[in-house]
Image 1: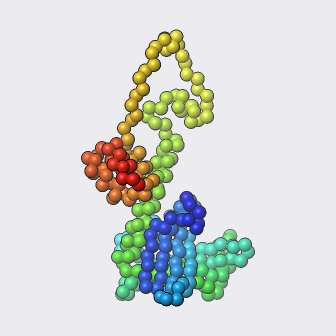
Image 2: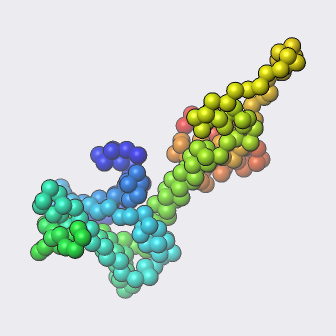
Image 3: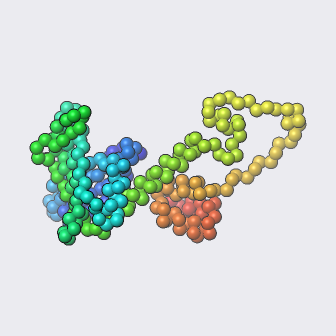
Length: 247
């Protein structure tokens, strides 16, 4: 994916006192959360960030997408930072009686290495930002990020299939080239005297080709599905319409 300072922002939430960005760090199997608290007319007061593993993000986001957090979530992480450990703590809470019941809190500060390299907070954090969300805003955030994770997973599956599965019409020569082997075709006199066969037309676009193009161009599933519906289920026509949109 992209470098840290060029990460794609999957979703952003802006409240009266804070901003939360959820960014793509999927090349390392994580989501990067960046939070900033501010005061109108005075600028930023504090900034904090956290890297959340995708394996932990999925159930957490699924709970938020359903509108209610099953239990409070707390995660302690950090980095050695050249011998001066930094602690990063993420907390997600659900206060049912509050006007903005979902609270996402990020805290950064000095840390202490324990055990096999785990880092725990050492004293008070130097930066702490809390985002207070309505259930509606929490659901919007969760669904947007889950959709992005699903699209990324589908692209991985498509890419993996292309690497390990020869196309249905692949010949022995094709497979040999992919495996790095030299496969010599057998030529007979009959073959030499036979006129070349006419070139076969390219296979029509299928679902895999369409979805790869759609996700590469940044379409959501719903937006891309609209082209398939307009094309009456014809993947080739849907792909042509998609490409003709200029995206």
